[in-house]
Image (cartoon, rainbow, N blue to C red; front, top):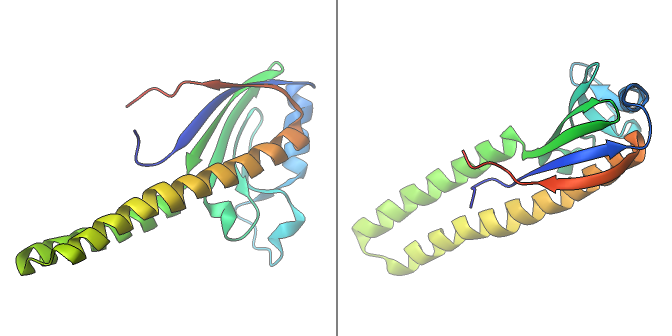
Length: 160
């Protein structure tokens, strides 16, 4: 099991890849632009000639996962990963919990150790997993609507 969830897909489009990329460009706000209302666009990120790296434009939930894709000849690949900011926040919380566990070991406070370990498990299995599943589903639905995904096949992730 991986610490941070991820999904890999093989996709087939119901239209040409260049049309799908141009439509995605129209619905994606560039990361470099400063805009006060991000909700006018579906995604924020970078869209190139046949590749994209985007996230949802919603302020809080958009930071949860990143969609990386490559489209060629009506087919493509899509990788959904946990975003870097969520990883950093989770690691910071885990480090605080581990320092608390070490302190509790020196004080022989078993109840505090239990609470800190449960905090780590709660953050990983409830907050990150559930959040990733919901946000990645929302992102996939919007992406399917925009670029016209006809067939979506989940591929197995290689363990690193």
